[in-house]
Image 1 (cartoon, rainbow, N blue to C red):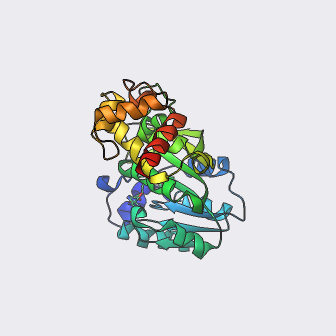
Image 2 (tube, rainbow, N blue to C red):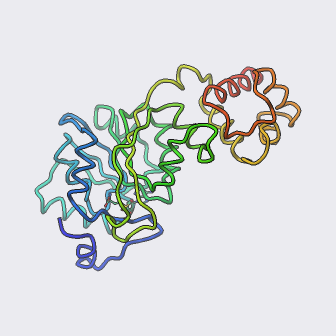
Length: 282
Ligand code: SAH
């Protein structure tokens, strides 16, 4: 594959910062990531942000087919030409915004659950994760590249400063493991921080222990919306409790000290809390 700089030059394009465009330079890095993700020949892959095809090409060789989502219409033309020049025929390019893409629809088109793959645009990584969590019944697993800071937050345990809304949400429905690290120098243009590739394997913990998923997510969001405040104060101003006193009463009734902070709550405690809020609303 031609280097991203030369390819963009040839097409008279420039990387767009607002779309989080940082292209992988070295095909052997792309090969390494794809090989560590153990894609099977029968797998169908949904790639988010295909860009110039650095990952799309090795993915198309490892999987049975690839749906490649790319929002930037000037890149989809380039990508099409790039894939054609490699004689690749099992990739469907979709000029879509992933955040507005119905993943279940693609699963139905594909006829089986999907493996999501992507070097995510860093500015929408968290939003993409939330979208994937909500669409997880259409997914087998996800292999995603994040800037290191976000990867650390995703994997952080309760009680640690990095633990937040996205950690609690994702850890409630998936097992997460790190499969590779990629240096900032491996991208054009070069970002400020290194990246990490995480494998996210969805499980059924949340389906088992959480009574209403949206409420669970909303309670987590409300608890972390004012991280510095105590739980009773953060939750007291949310739609789910009348005031801080009401929140304190519910928290105490399930054995959670109302003066704790959101970042100390385990997923089990968030589940108890949202289940209690659910019972109250009935
Ligand atoms: N996979 C390529 C490109 C990664 S850069 C590589 O590793 O080299 C991230 C890509 O996501 C860019 O091509 C960018 O245009 C695309 N992108 C940004 N926002 C998007 C969105 N909302 N939906 C789909 N693609 C998006």
